[in-house]
Image (cartoon, rainbow, N blue to C red; front, side):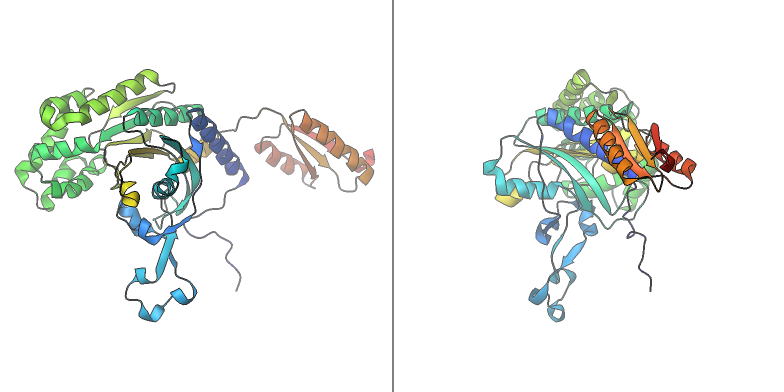
Length: 418
């Protein structure tokens, strides 16, 4: 039986043109984030299964690729459930590994610690446009900074990067978990029902106010509470002063620190930004990860029609490893979706030198080839990209392919020139 030549479902082969774009995007991300003081680290692809299943990753914990125990540790006949057979898994994001890394190495790290990660993660998800089972994540995180200076720095670094990649007119949507809870409390929902309410609220952009109401009622919530809750959202929908309106309705007791926190972040970023984007308070923004404790944010790029990255504050996660909470906040840029958009837009990677192809006809003397190689070496010293290849029989097709790859000049060497 012939071996399968297609990649595993949910993964993909990356062709040279896309790889060129991916490498360029990575270089822009790394150089820009470095300018903001972030330093790159790396963690293993495999993590202890207990860490991955610690109820911090929301629905992503259902999507873990688990790894069987090995050798004598694998006791199939004694296993009562799946987790008896596994002891590790492939990471589903970079945040859990980062927190474990920080907890293990904090004494050797600066405080606050500004981390940059670019690496693959794996989720047994349903593949679709811009979503794969193996994909690259690019995260920046600040650990040890309790103030919203962390959020401001993360948003400015990420938006500066997007601006350098040519993106304009996008939005950073922002909310605060404390504001979400305050709005639910205002309507009369009990704290133990918040997760259920927020899961439904998160669908607002897909099913609208009426859909959210219907689902909340189906879940058994009191109609008076539901109406009061959604009336609040109807008053701030498409409202440029939504944040101030929420504070006015909730009052200082409920809005509390979350209002001042969001207001300061939005105002500071708008005044300090260098890219073309808008900060938008989105009271329906929930973010799926259960580890978020405060500010949450998301990138919305019109060309994609969905989220192209996000993050937030997770002040209680380090404490699950060490027993002592450490303030932490992170932002993940949607690397795969950004590369997809650039590829679809016909983006060309900027080059500093000319790309020249030397086409050598079959039969050209070896003494002549030596001279060609010396000539190519000198051209490379001068900053040119030089490709030396044999000339195909269908030279026109070959040159067309090279032109698509960015080659702008061709030098042809025929055997009669020997």
